Image (cartoon, rainbow, N blue to C red):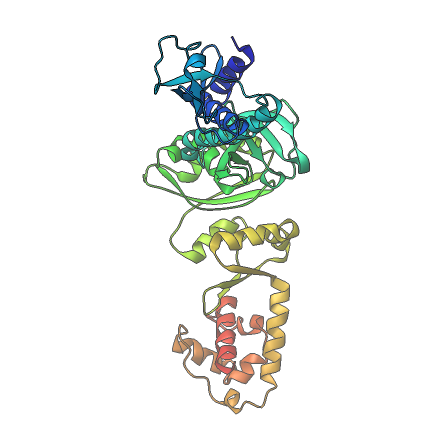
Length: 424
């Protein structure tokens, strides 16, 4: 019995999930090719391997002749009788043979072909078993840490790779550590095999964790509409419920935050902002910024840029560390989000009004015309208080205009902005 070969069969079958017959056939084909090359010009060399014992038999198919003219393909009747006593001329028999250089050279060639065949077989196993599990969670044990801090994870039958960019900068893993990760992709390698790529930085990893932790997400009652992530720091997601009786945010948070705490723990402390979905974009942004209150909001004509004004004390919270919060908010809303302090906004608007008020635009000295959204009685009240022209309004502070009965500071801003846009 060839115990070493049997051990290879059993290991590949048990650990790699490659069927024994596939392994046996790969080795048989490789040895046959090597044997044929050892017997110069012969294509009649065949190899057989016994799956259970591992014994290898090499033989040549030769035709029995009276006089040998081609020893590669023929065998004399006298010599053939040593193998098949009752053979006859013209009969093809199997002649046991071991090529003289079947040892080192043949073995080396065989190893190369075996390696190629087994990589292909392992690739098929990986693709069959793991390709349909993309974007699902898998767990394993860190087997080793490769070059560039690439983590090699033992998943059982195969090894998964998790490049450094695929796990948080706050995370580190040692050999033997348990790892939960997203099966990001199954990709073919340059050597003809396949590898399972894992990730803990993908937004889909958070989605999978939510599906695991929150039954309402798993069964489709709660839908994750949008999600953005800065791995290791913060994830923002907008959720809605298919069932009016189910609060989507409450379902994700859990009783006393139990569900979200489990997710945050798995994410090594990464913050998770769960935001309820609403149809109106401006209201959605307000909910995403809560508890920060938007004081002013402007949307560009193409709808791709949104500028907001917040109170000075809310500005650091809105921007976040290194601008991370406002960047994620912009990605979540699908716009370029600009944030300005209220004091800076007031100063800028005052400068713009002063510049316009001192211009030579004669239309600024004409009587006040109707302004959309402002009742005519309000305009009459302005005129009565001495604000009879656009220029007179531009030269006054919003606070002074707001002292006119019936006019709030918001209405004063609206009137001044209307005048500015008309002359822009």
